[in-house]
View (spheres, one colour):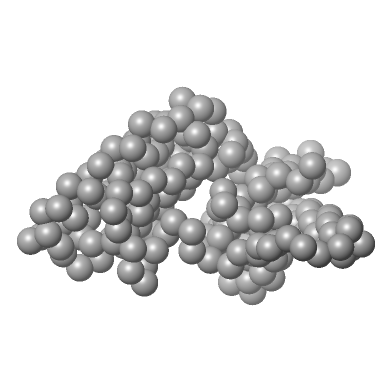
Amino acid sequence: MFSSFNKFTVTGTSSNPHDTVYGLFQCRGDLQNSDCAKCVAHSVSQLGVLCLDSCGGALQLEGCLIKYDNTTFLGVEDKTVVVKKCGPSMEYDSDGLTRRDSVLAYLAGGGQNYRVGGSGNIQGVAQCVGDLSASECQDCVSEAIGRLRTECGTAAWGDMFLAKCYARYSDGGDHSPAGSGAHSHDNGGGDDDNDVERTLAILIGIIAVVTLVIVFLASLKKICGDEKECK
């Protein structure tokens, strides 16, 4: 069964510790498999340009994250702030701020890897990278939400992306973290043959994406193995 999170280790043949490349990808928890596969494939193609000949890189898109390095980061908690964005103030909207605080409290109290919540027009979402334990995930999300409260203050929307988790909220306008992005929905009513063809197409696409990630990581082994230090 396809998972929206996957991690890889591609080991070289030499004794050089830099000759091993570690990588992972993860999609937003509400994406369907086909959309996840498309997002990851697009991320890999972008990384090949943005991080050309680099032994480490990461790209966070709206729907997915892909990260690789020749120093292992898998299973390691990291609360470094990667991206912080805060919207305009809604200082005089006391009801909105109350609903915002309620949504953030709900997200902080949840135990799932992917969490969504809403109150009125305020929407929120939080997610951890799948290599964290439940306690590490909770710790990371709590840190992200705490930073949102203090650093975004009375902002109408806020994004706080840490290295291994993120938390976001919005007032339901254009900047809407929960439920945004591309989705594919089956309204039913199609015949069984079409359903089978669709399923096979999705599976083939998923297999191709996983293969693409492995090939991408494997292509970095020689580059990283030849370097003493990689940034």
